[in-house]
Length: 371
Image (cartoon, rainbow, N blue to C red; front, side, top):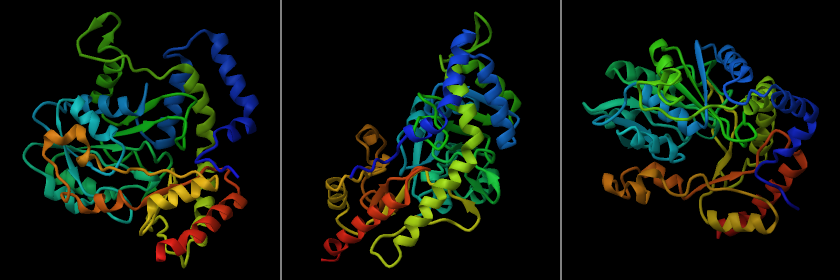
């Protein structure tokens, strides 16, 4: 038995002719950078999210950084971020010249705790970056209310939540900026790196276009310190195809998640929570294991079942941030969850048979946990 975390080849095989024709079309056009496929994809994303402006960039990390810079975030500013997430969210704050201020998370949703956000606001605070982690939306009503009260920018990190909704509205369309990653394993992923920024801010939109292209509003005339960060045409052509299937594939993920959830009833494991007013898109299916999490991971591996720990060290405890002065005990929920979370295989084409095999293995290991 060999059950991977994700199998990217299944969808390629099912839509091979469509993908192959798209790639060949780009090859024959000779327009590989900032071509018509990129423009068409941006317009389609704008329509899908109901936003004025979409700008493709080279990665999700670049999307976050360029979004922050377009809003004037820099030296002397503080940006509130979750500690329990991939490091890119705080990494870009440092790259922008500002200081990340880590906040704790809701133990059910794994997303920023609005009450802890309030505690972390100072006169230096300029923005909040909520992460819609694992595919579950953050509490955007509360976060936007806090931002409005304190005149703060909101940059949504939607890398793991393409197609997720909060109160019927797409994540990425609440804040000043919505930032996306098209890393291949994402719910909407390319066949290489890529990212995108959504905004309704006309002035910031013009800056984003310049920042991603060497700080140039006009070719060979440079007035900003910019980047070479452009979504290439081949990725855009592939993503255009995948965008048409995104909702269907997210529904398939949700069906897999339901089978897991039903099978985990009356076990020692805690299945992922889904708030009543959200659509969780299950980029990851992350359970809480009360004890012996690492041993369970090894047990599953011996049976040919993949699993991952996202994330074993909360960012406030990462060595790279030791100069910021954070210490163990500062964010108790993040620190507790980093020792309990385990992500199981999930992708649209994961078979019922394989889900049942995974559930069987989890139940088999229960006796070890109960000892």
